[in-house]
Image (cartoon, rainbow, N blue to C red):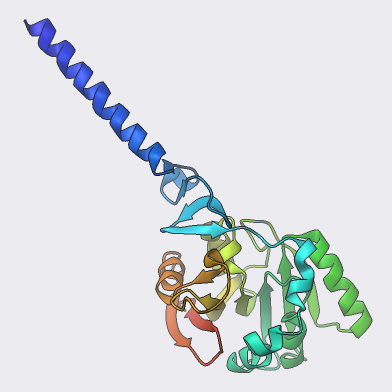
Length: 249
């Protein structure tokens, strides 16, 4: 009799485990990967995502260098007001700035104009993008910009060297956002800032792919998770939030 009860209990436990596994598979969720399995999850990728989940958000596919023309599209001036973004940063002429996800240098050259006695680190993970940037710097004779080959989990910047880091329409594509922002925090000076421009996910009328937009709440959640302090959100741009965070002194 006891043996039959034990067999029934084992069968019940196996059945329950199978149901849990089937439920996870049905929802496309498989617990994973880095940092002890506590940071990321993996699921079946959606149309424009990589299937990697961070703090409830699916990470978007990276726009490859083949789409560099999109960064230089004529309509971007009207859509994003790039000079307004730079003006809102209130940079000092001697500041050291990092443009993370610099691409072709669309924002980088504007930043350089504001720090003639400082420096701009132009960080990108794609060598092809950096090649396009270097060509631009040579043609325009700009010397305060230093291109940096970043990794997917590290911007490769010197420790406590940066006054302000800017990410324009880039953060949502980071494959390893937790590690990237942790390393970036190390590169920011105490009291320095990180500023993100992201298309507003709260507005369905903004015609940008779903995973290439972020809500203010989600940005705060992810930046605060690595120790940045939210300062303010500027909503004066046509379609983007501009979120300011600080590394505590």
